[in-house]
Length: 183
Ligand SMILES: O=C(O)CCCCN(CCc1ccccc1OCc1ccc(-c2ccc(Oc3ccccc3)cc2)cc1)Cc1ccc(C(=O)O)cc1
Image (cartoon, rainbow, N blue to C red; front, side, top):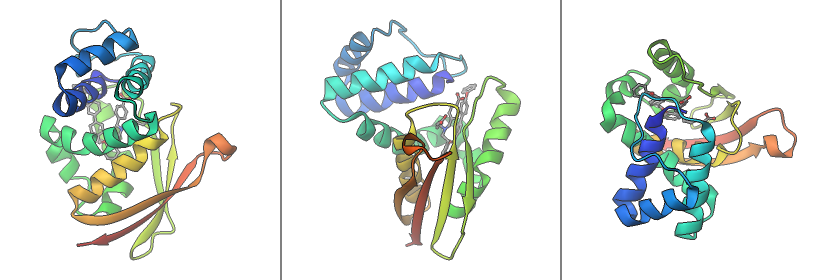
């Protein structure tokens, strides 16, 4: 995972719980990095250890941490210089979701170590669609719930998302029903 992800976790924890809590989380995770370089590639395990340690230190379920992080990621990347790229990826929530693979392909051209998941939309109706999420990473599914919620805020759109298929329960990939209503 690029360091931008770990840096975003650090910024979310520091902004909401302070520097001391972040130090405790890094210590619990046994992660020694003082600074995460956005454009450096880090083992995925570091991200998983940080989420697990945050769950212990904050006494919150890891799924809740990942969901909050997904929501935070959308605004964080916009303020960290990817706002224009995100704005070019669609004017509405369904459009953005349909263009997500293109967005990742665009980033991947400049940053070849990117290992993006794949998102596909099907059964697209006026106010709903099915979102298919395929990834070679494990355990980040709750982040997708937060990412879509974050897109709801970005597009001032009420969004309801529920998982309808789960890889953990034997499905080939995770699938979500996304219902949206622009305000
Ligand atoms: O792998 C999984 O199964 C779940 C990963 C979910 C995280 N993605 C979120 C995708 C997303 C979904 C909804 C809305 C917005 C989303 O992201 C927009 C986005 C995607 C990628 C970047 C990005 C930009 C630069 C990166 O790397 C840098 C950073 C600074 C300098 C050089 C390279 C890494 C990711 C920025 C915004 C983004 C992503 C972040 C990092 C990686 C990666 O390091 O492989 C792959 C994907």
